[in-house]
Image 1: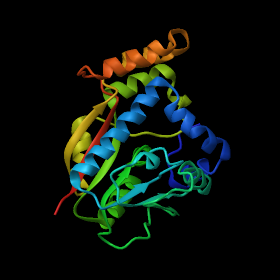
Image 2: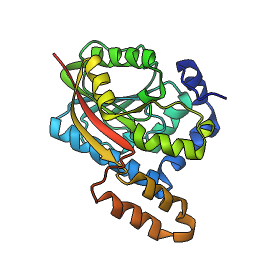
Image 3: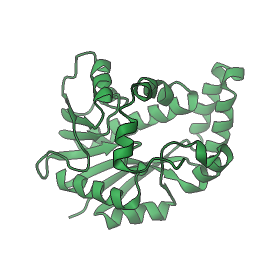
Length: 249
């Protein structure tokens, strides 16, 4: 079975209550995924604080994995196409959504006026689509961003991710991910009206960190300590990038 890469198929997949219920554990429980989660949160809060963000849009918020950890947003809107995901996100906020509003809608047809937001951010979303659909998403994000607003987004390094996927078996991945070289990633952003201002590498020693993560049951808490310690050392085997892409013009 081919990985899911079409908007309607992905919408259906994330309506499944089993997928929704397992999502947070899958993304945060393991030492490796937990590190990625923590570093994404740190990145997003740091960038939004530095930019003095007043309004933010989170696309594909899922169960509020990131939303619940945002500290530098005076007013935010979190959207998702999955009602079960949105319900879970609101539950995680404990009824204290505060500055956040939640809305079920389609990211390809955002129900907002032009130039509504200082920042749009999304993780594990745009990369799941083929080029034509990514262009459609970029166009909508461009439309709702204010002049010189920013898109904060993740991307996967082909040089590292492809080898790991082949070892694990490409058929085991249920959802498509586009993989990039740094130059391909920058060019895609330029072609869609963005300038890459910052590009942070996360999971800097991914092949080694991945091997340690697989030994987590044998190593116990030591696995987490080793994975985090490696992250403090500069490395070339980066798995994930987080980008600040400013709207041009």
